[in-house]
Every structure is written in structure tokens, then in C-alpha cells.
Length: 227
Image 1: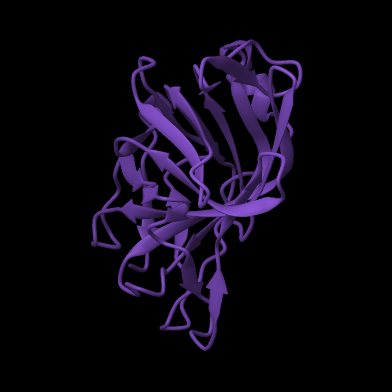
Image 2: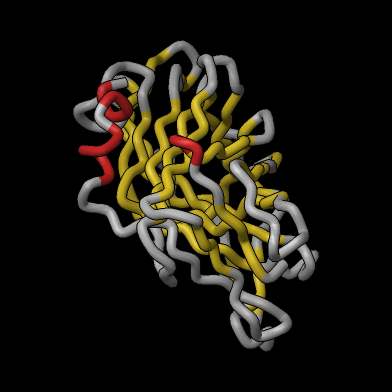
């Protein structure tokens, strides 16, 4: 939990949650805030179920997730910081290097706002994952790729809000959304997560068992447009 007790320190060097996006309308959505920096936060009480599962049914399971985003200015690039809690492989606690047992941290990764190909009028957030390792006892698991979440947001481009909602779902090693349109709407971009439990990289899904409501801290307000 040490990563989240020093919010300002953790993000001081990040230029975050800009928004690269794709659209069949050749228009890029963006996030604008009434005041910067805009901090967005989701922190549950340690009960939200999480699961990483491969197409071979190998999996990690956890309870609890924290997600922090910082909007520092209107930009086409962004980063996110996520901490998964109480992560286990069977009965074995798992962690990223230097973190407490059960804690898996993803930091310094990009996020892009996109239009998923299956539903071009729906917003999505493509969370890019640079390859990293998770230790579960003597076993090392590697994860990399991209996870595409659905974003629910008021459809009025003029409405400032204090929260937005994301859903990251999947099963049997495949996330529900795995593809989005490029900016011109002419090509589809794959967004697939891969993990290696020791037998090579396999397609995987990251599933968060409830909607994630990202709340603007300190009374911040923002809007996403166009939708």
C-alpha cells in the first residue's frame, strides 16, 4: 500500500492520461478539465475480484484493485498506475519485485482512449502493458500486451462530470473487447493480453469483477468529447 500513500510523489514525474484515440469518424476524443492537474482514482475495500487467465486455463486470482490516473494537460499520450491486491496462484501468494506478498503493481504504462471496433459509438480505454514479471513462490510469470476496457460516460460533450466508469471483462483467456479502429477508421488495431506461466506466451484475459468508477479528487470536473 506504500505506493498509494504518496500520491503526489508517485505521479510527480508522470505526464499522464493524455488521450490517443481512434474513431470511425476521424475525430479523436479527448479529456478536458476545468483545472489541472486532474486526479482520477478508484480504490475499493479489498473485495473486488480480479483474475488473469490464459487460454490454457492457468490463472492468477486476487481481491481488490486500486487505479490512479492523472490528467496533467490535454495530450495524446497517457500513463496509468494499478495495484492488484491479495493475488494468488492457487494458495501461493504472488507479487511484483520489491512489493509485499499479494501485491502486483503496474506502473508507467500508457493508456489510450479508443473506439472499439465491435461498437464504434462506444468509448474504450486501451491499457498497454509493458512486459513485467510476477513472482509466485519459485515460479515467475511474465505478462505483456494490451487490455481493452469499455468506458461509460455521459454522451453530452458539454457536460462536466466528476466520474467516469470502466469495465474490463473476459473469460477463458480472451477479453470481451480485443480490437479498436485506428484514427482514420480504416484499420483495426489488435489489443490482446499475453502471459507466460512457463510454457510460452498465451492469449489471456484480465477480468475485474465489478465496474470501476474513477472519481475526480479534490472536486475536479472534466468531460470527454466527442462521443
